[in-house]
Length: 327
View 1 (cartoon, one colour):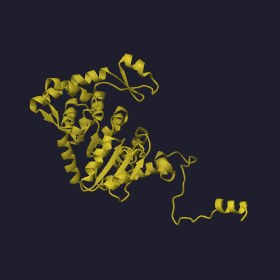
View 2 (view 1 turned 60 degrees about the horizontal axis):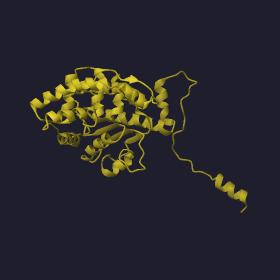
View 3 (view 1 turned 180 degrees about the horizontal axis):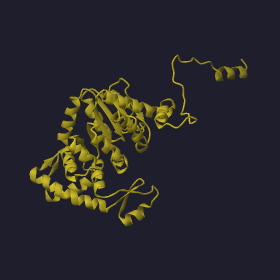
View 4 (view 1 turned 30 degrees about the vertical axis):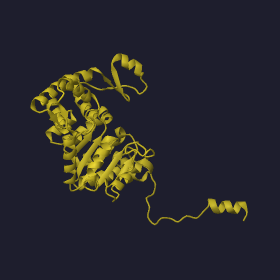
């Protein structure tokens, strides 16, 4: 066989056409612009656009199936404008359980006391430190905000201590929402609507700093994380169906998944994060790994979207919860 013939056979190999398929097609901008149809077109665009569209489909199934909906997010989400999206969902009772980090709680409360400011990713850390300004990506937080938070939080700890020497993170967050009494706050609405907030890492941040100082005055004061673990697991076991929306990764992701392992897996799952699985971390693990542990049911009602939640999640809410709200 000559070389040309061999090359042709290998390069021009005949294919077997699938009997059913979705044609790859993007939005037709020759038409009048329709943002709803534009987002719908993502389903046939391929790559992460199609995963994004699948996430919308799965969340709409969660809502239709009357799932107990878990919303998990890391603290940087609350640093950003996503805080206002979360507040909307909690205010309107569209989620049932929140799991977040300590920063995901305190930064909501701090924003009630003073604004976070848009900055730049390339600002000098040395110069910002001289000015007492903290940087979270391209968001700036003057350190005076944390001083104001101390003035708010320490009296609350004293009030708690007079009543009992031990408190769970969910109880403390309930009191924070009640005491801040500000309708801009996620946790004010969680308090009003009795939506539990779990934070197994509540001391990893400014609240932890304050509790550290407080324990010099009251060494027998305790944060009871074990009580919240039992409460979250019991609530999850009792759920008829569960839907998980997890923005970011790390501890909050695993805490929600581990609770769902108690019921042999979540029914619906959407991840939005950029973590990779090559190092074996749970943060980057694909959903198939969670299926192997019994944390997610194997019926394929799940998707991971690689991307920035500050871009993607408001669009998802517009096509799911907000759409449902307007019907």
